[in-house]
Amino acid sequence: MSYDSIGSLVTLDGLFGEFRVGSLRLRNRFAMAPMTRGKSPEGIPNDENVGYYRARAAGGVGLIITEGTYIRGPAAGPSAEVPRFYGEDSAAGWRAVVDAVHAEGAAIVPQLWHLGVARGDEPAFEPGTPSVSPSGVDHAGQAVGRPLTTADLAALVDSYVESAVLARQLGFDGIELHGAHGYLLDQFLWAATNQRSDRYNGAARDRAAFPARVVAAVRAAVGPDFPIIYRFSQWKGVDYTARIAESPSELEQLLMPLADAGVDIFHTSLRRHWLPEFTDHATDSSLAGWTKKITGLPVITVGSVGVDSVFRGDRIDESQADRFRILREQFERGEFDIVALGRALLADPQWVDKFRTGRLADITPFRVAPR
Ligand SMILES: Cc1cc2nc3c(=O)[nH]c(=O)nc-3n(C[C@H](O)[C@H](O)[C@H](O)COP(=O)(O)O)c2cc1C
Image 1: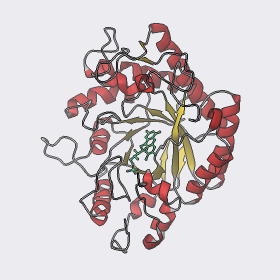
Image 2: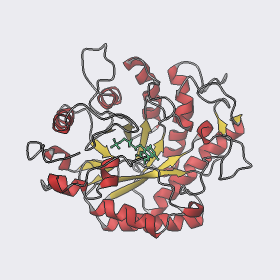
Image 3: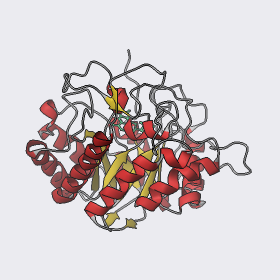
């Protein structure tokens, strides 16, 4: 994408104001979206990882949400190169990341991740351990691994708590729970993967009960001020058309148990930030806007800001200038508080500073790697 055509027409000044919630202080409202890399051999963040995050912090972003990091499990994920968020070796690696990011003036939270059934049948990491998920089936009803027992659920809660407490000890500015894209916590919210017959299934609010239990346990362990961000999505990695909430009232049933359990910020994972969520309503609010309206909590939006193709999708018809204008209008209407950028920050770590200082023509645009 060329930024030349946008010129100085677009300003996003409001997004360069500070943001505060609990103990979190951000110098601006631009976040780096979580992006898996698989560049941590043995699951331990190394110097390359430190340099990668330092560069984005030095480039002006307010908040970094790390790539998805595995909790202890059981059976959190398939890769030995995805960084872990438990154990002394990984903790030492993460401490170096936090210190480097803080030295550049940005805040940082780890994204805590468990893939559930999406870990598959042939994991490279912990290959002897079967995958676990709400019902031991994937979205298509195929048996994978085994369903979570009552004891497994308790162990999982402990694993989330262990990582959250570690984050606090290491000086992170909060945590993000990965509850999006069809991974473990989302597998409870999504009827296709939640076929349980216990209290963790039923109406939408029942499907939210286990994720809410995780939030409540983390909140109790980290205290009242340490921010908990909860990322969720309608779409799944295996199905971009999937939905967990067909109406605002269903969305409310899913979100309020999480809010009541102690979420501070919701992160609505969108592939196109500008689209209205519920088209049969007399508002063109995005999912971010609905989430803010329903919960009253701060919200992070995301989805094709500064890039000209949708995440794992097609080229975008709307011009970048029009989309920046919509983003500004959404912010001014109070639909979101923070905007996350993913691929734009992969391509140019200095995207935020270049935008802030009007050097749009200097931005290195994101291009999909040729196949
Ligand atoms: C290489 C890559 C890895 C990603 N890994 C994660 C991840 O670990 N956790 C997550 O929640 N989202 C992940 N995402 C999704 C991004 O966080 C973001 O929502 C998506 O890229 C859309 O934002 P963008 O249009 O600004 O790139 C990933 C995206 C990319 C491009």
